[in-house]
Length: 536
Image 1 (cartoon, helix red, strand yellow):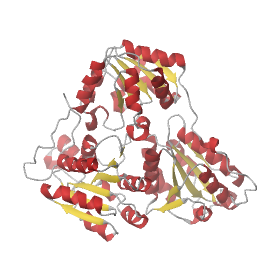
Image 2: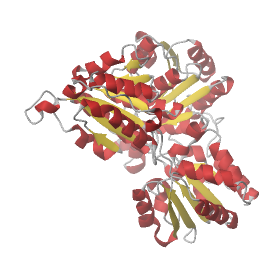
Image 3: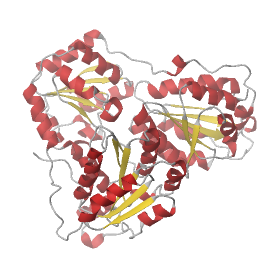
Image 4: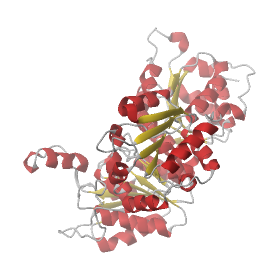
């Protein structure tokens, strides 16, 4: 058995049925080993797309997403999205072909120190040197990717290692791939619950890994158990996240913050005043000692307790304790603040153009009419409009990293993960250009979903910065053309719609959703700046 065979059989033992990949010389043995193993290769047009697709697949399925790329430029192209994966706290395994170990230091084809490139962005970056090690190392990578704060891992696969005889080594058992729990102690759990019950206005913050898309009704159950508001934060706009209304006002009133895995960083204004009351205490539960240290650095004496535990395990333990008291009126107040919006979808554009809010509201109508819908939000200004309006129950966003351009890839992965779902992937005309050729990938693999482009003919986030900081007479470098993305989609095997009038919008979205193809609805919008939360 070759190293490549042991690798693929280990992936199969881990439950992997789909790999996102772009082929290349050094990974051909892995492709060959996939024949007859029940593992589908989704062959993409760019290596970065493989990582974005694996990220969305992992978030929507609860599995470890797997991306497979070749050496040299292949691996280099895949590195950028690892930042998005790390910040979204998503378990992804990146496998890359590599030059032979036996030629190290001799100038082999595409020889480079791959793990030195990926280590700063990954929880684990390794280069096995013996074929018989591959099963053990893949299982270790799965455990690390899933455990604690989930994230990306990378295994470089030297060509002579995947080609070598692995002997009679068998793939690891299923238990070898499982997440390693880090339980919250009974005493700590009761102390947290009692602290919340004693506070007047407590707030529980959680990070991306505990959002509704990944944990279902867990946040509602936790909120009911503690009788306290539980808020998932996953936007780079932090306290100004337009999907969370007057979040800043909520946190400014809180007298206790219980932090289950949410980094105390720029998204929470570093926990500083006046965003938070100077007398508000913090309890931080995190599996990562570095994040506890960050909390100490930012909070100082306001950090009352730091506990080492997995936030998911902690949430489950707190739910098991049952209802602990608290103030139902405060929960209601918080919900009304979160529901507040600084805009109305009914407000027309003075020049009669479709507004971004109207477009997103039309998509929401389509999603609510579908029995199973998934929303994707990508991009700067238009992406924030989408976040402000789309439901959060089944959603993948370009999260804390602020990385844009993955939305088209996220939509493809979502459509393949749940072929019965209606998937709408919303993005700006800037964001769509990063991976537009993946429409051909979607058409080739039969992934039917709807790409909705809010087209304002510019990189609007940067355009808005120029307007705000430098003035309207110093706009430069942010304009885009009136390219017909809908026609390009049709040319690549999909369905296209072009919309300039509001009264044409709903019908166009419905035709796209019913086309049975990857579809692009290219909608000309007003280009208004995104909302920035709400002052209640």
